[in-house]
Amino acid sequence: MENNPVVTQMRQLIQLIAKHNHAYYVMDQPSIEDSEYDQLFHQLKALEQQYPDLVQADSPVNKVGGKPLSKFETITHTVPMLSLGNVFNQEELFAFARRIEERLQNQKIHYDVELKFDGLAISLWYENGILTRGVTRGDGETGEVITQNIKTIRNLPKVLSSDKVAVPRLLEVRGEVLMPKAGFERLNAENEAKGEKTFANPRNAAAGSLRQLDPNIAASRPLAFYAYGIAQCEPNHGLNSMSASLEWLTNFGFAVGERHFICDSIQEVQEKYEQINQERPNLAVEIDGMVIKVDDLQQQQKLGFLSREPRWATGYKFPAVAALTTVENIDWQVGRTGTLTPVARLNPVAVGGVTVSNVTLHNIGEIHRLDVRIGDTVSVYRSGDVRCHHKLKCFK
Ligand code: IVH
Image (cartoon, rainbow, N blue to C red; front, side, top):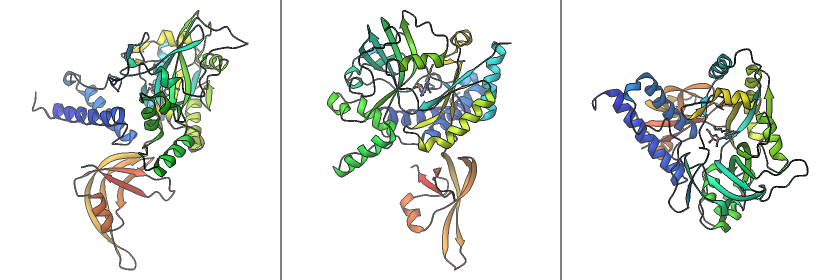
């Protein structure tokens, strides 16, 4: 078994994913782009689907990332915090809808389409209207109690009151803590001026802030909470749809996403996805896709879960803006004026909707800076530039 090339490949992928998980979740220093991480994950998932007998015991495929650290108290989630499946294109989205339609024959299905916030999943407990507990997702079963830090988040109600609806005895709200883009830029500029560590992205800034043992540090960080669901409510709120639950939460002052739609067909979902992909740079917060949910709560219940993912919801990721590939060759191109420019010939790879097989290395200095060589694995990412330059990063 050890010599089986499929097993060897699976072992390599598992080790790589574990290394990047540690950098991301524990060190707050991502070592790879999210889309590249997804790529590794999906390579492993595809191998496991093809060779189910060879699935390794420690495979991360059916687990939720992120082990709780030891410094906070940990607690078991009454309702586990599960993860979402993902689709990456229209075909997969339509297949998701077909699987739902097959199980809910002759029923009208409405889809609730939300932003997929790129922050940290958090569970909030309100007992008799008072915020008593804030817990991280952790590994999905057990999370860290970070109530003190959570209480410093300014856009989050610490006490529930409403003149429209009754305050429940117990309410568990699920949502995402993140750092809006503007606050992130400001924090990094301040840290840079002070010669302190800057954060790689808003998600890591939010994670680093919540992990502080001193709540004064969290209080000084521009964090925000966006609600996306209700895990428990006693007595029951009596609502019958996802969209109504979100609306209900706003009565207590919870923030929900800046954009949010109800669609009557999966084609309409696709249109909203394309619209938001365009609007993405103008949003106040980082998102990495959309979340598509069956709106009706009874239909959700009927659909249930498959392994650790709901059948009634999926993430719909935006196209990769970076991907991994290998350098096949390095050529010198002769320009009109006789100048020589080095060009990396790549194993063709799809990035942000185009296939990339050549990337300019500009000059010999850039080759030295990147230390790029034939056979290297490199990350190709598309800059915002319309002329579509591609940059390289080298993994050694
Ligand atoms: S609903 C059963 N809605 O995405 C899980 N999740 O990949 C239901 N996320 O851990 C989750 N935005 O933290 C939901 N509008 C949204 C979301 C959202 C971001 C995160 C969530 C979850 C992860 C799954």
